[in-house]
Length: 279
Image 1: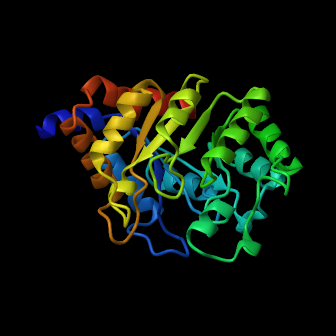
Image 2: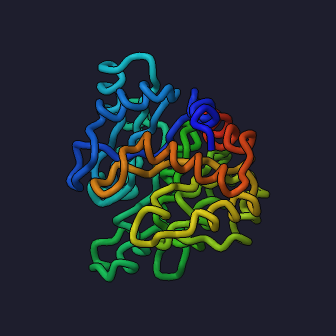
């Protein structure tokens, strides 16, 4: 695939899922390096994510150091921020956070998958399977502020429960976090059903560049089945063992083109949809 085509698709694109330092997990680059390299790659913006601390203030400082590109932050509702804490959400949104992720490494699903201590989980349902009151409190804040709801590392069933409750509260910007990844793997028929409800799906290159080694052909199949119009492509890079995020984002685009995803579909997934979600 000609580099010029990939360059044109990267121009003004947004990577909605990048991990940088500082972090308790070793990362490839720090936030300012991520911003500089994204600007050099002519991206329009990057969303910073950290499982252990909010990134809105960090994103603000990175953008001051690297003007001319949009660097935005997020908050993940793990134990480190008090779990399903609406006050943390309110504060982070005021600081500029653009996405609120439900629990990731603190979700019961993630901990169970990794055979961890479930006593440390941040649950979203009670023992009868009903959403906890705190879920509704967080959703009220998201509905009021208009930021993105990310489903985090919940089970597909939990994600759908949260999505239905969110839409009942009028939340429109809903982004299912890497539905192709083995921990959160959502059946494609469920994805297609939720897409009909206006839900978006963030497909991350990490699933193909981790221990899972998910076939990129399978990612392309899911895109074709569910639709590019409700899909976002992100790198989810920043790991020490992977390329730098911009290189990973570039390779993801190139790989999807190689599996028959059209340039027009890529434009929608890396430019049109992210820009709408972040507005």
